[in-house]
Length: 214
Image (cartoon, rainbow, N blue to C red; front, side):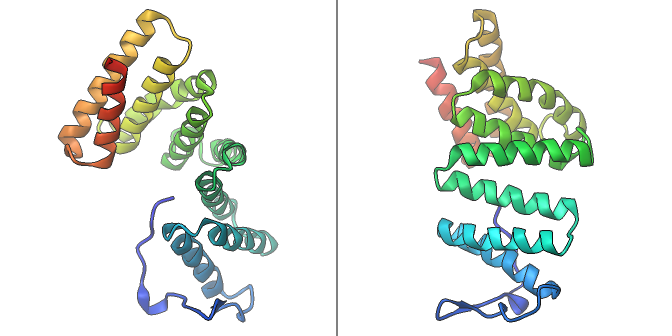
């Protein structure tokens, strides 16, 4: 889950373990914003159990209030990230899959948010070493991301890196693995040029590439 830029003027504060805006009615938009900020702040502080408690309360509230499906899906995606941080990988996978499926219907396959959710889903499949399933997803969305976002966009590069890893780690032919290694070499090269050699994504891709070359 990406960290959020915050306006400290209206930021909620915790005092003595109590949340300052809890007394507000559920229909107050400030309460919803405060819960979202608090959940994100707790996540960024590695307080994942506390973050999950806030996020689940936020999800229940948004559902009761009849919030938009887009808003509900965003909260569910945050919960999936927290599940993953807590090591609850299967639960994260199921929720990422549900979010991706819903966004396909809501936004379509060429939407950036749908592509981002596909990436979350595929990366979790990789974490579980379910390489064939990951390849199936990535082969569908990677060409779309390159066409819609461009070949040098961070999401396009991430999807290509994941597809390379799924192919190299899974049951693939020798030729498929050679192609995947060339793809990963290209991804690492583009990342060095576009993101810089010290960027975490560049370092991660280079580390994976070095490992496959051994």
